[in-house]
Amino acid sequence: MNRTLYSLLLHLLLPLIFLRLLWRAWRAPAYGRRIGERFAIGLPAFRPGGIWIHAVSLGESIAAAPLIRELLARYPQLPITVTCMTPTGSERIQALFGERIQHCYLPYDLPWACQRFQARLQPRLAVVMETELWPNHIHACHRRGIPVVLANARLSERSARGYARFAGLTAPMLAELSLIAVQTAAEAERFRQLGARSECVEVTGSIKFDLHVDPELAQRAGELRESWTATARPVWIAASTHAGEDEVILAAHRQLLAEHGDALLILVPRHPERFADVYELCRREGFATVRRSAGAPVAANTQVLLGDTLGELLFLYALADLAFVGGSLVANGGHNLLEPAALGKPLLSGPHLFNFLEIANQLRSAGDLLQVADAEQLHAALRHLFDEPQAAAHMAESGLGVLRANQGALVRLLAGLERLLPPT
Image (cartoon, rainbow, N blue to C red):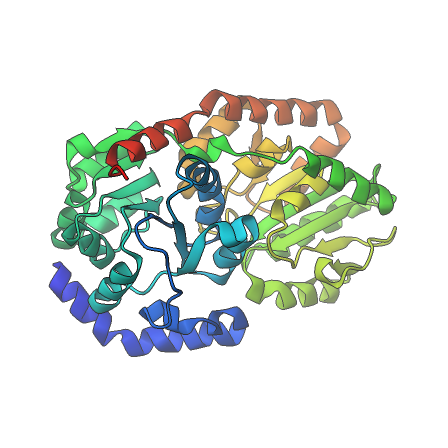
């Protein structure tokens, strides 16, 4: 498949794309807002000539935050525009940076929408986070002479096989990238085999290790736990959970309550459209549950706190003693393990971590990651860590050591961007 055929198929799929958008808006009303931006209609009045960063969803937005902060500090004269595709990503971006950046949804990868977006924005440099590859957006930049960087790039063997099936589309697209800053040497080789120019591929590491945690976060979390009279309670968090995981987590929590009757679970579904369903599941399973969004205090008999707010995940991690990171009991590939590690939390996950293999391997080898496959194994891990606080503390310190040993990717990435940024 080449780019012309790809564009034709996208146009033929437009009715289905629009119907899917309406379906998502029905489940999560935020998807129904600013629909025009997705077709390059009603775009904000941008200041042109700056740096454009695309972070597709919440995870990439979090990963991009240290980079955005550095670019704002280093290039105060240039407007920074951040795009995404999801309401959760949009809300996180706006919560973190407000009016310091320009923001909109990225238009779909339709040639005319890409051209209209580029004409309005006129960036000097484009930075795409991780592996969000859109052939027409990249080609539109290439035609205008705008360098495009794939930052913090990752490419699993499975994803590489998928891209290889469409070599006629993938190879020309990768050849138009000016820099591919990859996380590992193995991923660098996969990009080269798919058609990236060898001189444009650099191993910089993962900027997710360069995570900055507000030192006041732990203090605020401690004060809230004190207000709940919960400083001595066993508190654990299951974050970024997907459908099919909540039942397993609640089953493990039920077993834990049989041994630690005052244990508290903070349950945080990944997607806002699932908040109400998961709350009903908790109630139906007989757990005394409060919603974080309701503002009600956690009482002594509260067994589950549903984290149904946006932009608070780091704070919710800080409230807990142990952290389970979701998207890993089901074949979703996992989510960011480094946020709870940076907060000094012993880590638990399921077996499906193919989106974070290198990071997971390092954390597991260092001793700060226990992987479980079902409720029984999860309960056993929880019981062990709550009953053996010294083991939990050792895990937490090991995770912090992994972060410290891998920091510096952000500096290497910024050096690459500086080489490509035309002088003002």
